[in-house]
Length: 386
Length: 135
Ligand SMILES: [Zn+2]
Image (cartoon, rainbow over all chains, first blue to last red; front, side, top):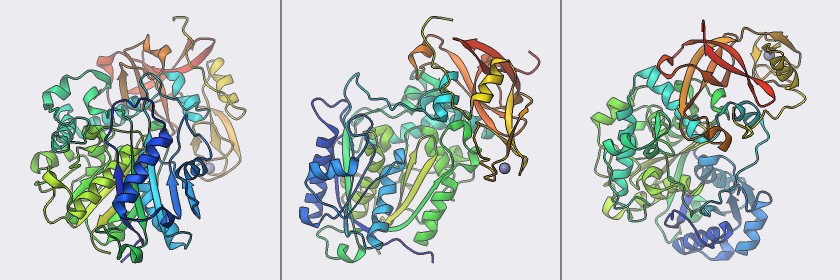
């Protein structure tokens, strides 16, 4: 068996996503999230000796670890900024375990949060190849990039608008079981999704995540220390990562996107196959991203996600529970913290704290993250046993 | 064209020869002397083999359409006035892919459509847009 990472998640904290935040700072939301996770883990402030944070466009562009450490009031022996877009949350978990394995620290706070003020979204001033070779042609922003990937899938494999709408429908349907979700109590039909405004054809509005304010934190410690944790520890059993490009124009073909490397790598480290997974906690900023991942797990042929969706069920009682928290399409995307929601749902389920939406007899969860345009990908296998 | 300013390319020392040729309505790409592969976007090294001997050569300016999108909500305010419009990814005959603006009727857009370069003036300079081959 491939070498397994040494780490376990012993604490989680997550703020309920809000469409807009008023009078909040990102640092403030970070602290709220960390305090929740520390209470959940039942540890003291003094036990924290590692800190992983994300980039903060606008509020703290540089020196993020020191700024956050000082604000929290901790003095870690290992910190870093993880910059993998939507893969940052998942990417933090194995980096925390690796830092622990290297002997640099033992208990790592991994935190992401973001304020979202109405009409005041900070923009990062790019001066790189995307700005030079994409923006001048009328292609800026993620919507158009993901539309291009969706169109390629439709043309290559004959997948239909209805097939992609089904992914958004499943997410929104699962969100009806999660009171924290931004779309809790707001059911939609496949028809509603198909009738929603076209943003960048072939992508409809309801195939795109809702930007929110919020925050999320997980606490990772060594497998040894986790044995004495007050909470049921959730072990990192495998991890995989792959980055292939930045701009969508430089992406490999649709069947060679980086999840075809990172997901199998995580399964291999865990010593399991896709069939052994009891929860698919798949990063879903757009519907087409889920399609690509379903086709990278080894449970569905390339290009065939639509028939896979027709032949299986995806709620917590289904044969392939998928994004039982509603995914980000149903839960909301609090910037980089949105990616962490997939980690937190897996932890809740593996602890048996899923409440109304608890998956019976869950042993293994696949958690993924995706940044830029299916550029930065991370996959984790989490489980209840070392 | 309206008088809203479109975001112009942010040209670097390395990419300047590309844009200088575009302004003359010529399409040049770099080719690696070591591995013979073509390169886009311009660099000082070859991303295929890390070779450092790159030559600017006249390229076909033709390729096929890998994907496209009709933009209804533009990411940049200047482009919003032009919506709906089409952008796409072209796989050049030489190998590399690029993102471009498409001057092709929506009904004619299809996978692997043969396309060719069309120099269009936007603001003060020409940009390599693409049209259907034969148009
Ligand atoms: Zn070369």
